[in-house]
Length: 69
Image (tube, rainbow, N blue to C red; front, side):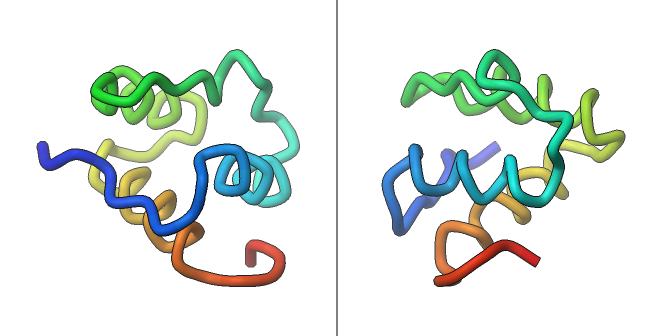
């Protein structure tokens, strides 16, 4: 799978993800550049989505301003 294409820093995207799903923890959102598959798999299990859906959500949140919807 292609690497994540983030237009904002991970910390900002992480906070938006927490807004969309309050059950996500800092451990769930632990991200090391180059370890995209690990993050996508972990979040996919937690959010009951496949990796492509999670990747799309993350990239969408990284391009939008304001609160997550």
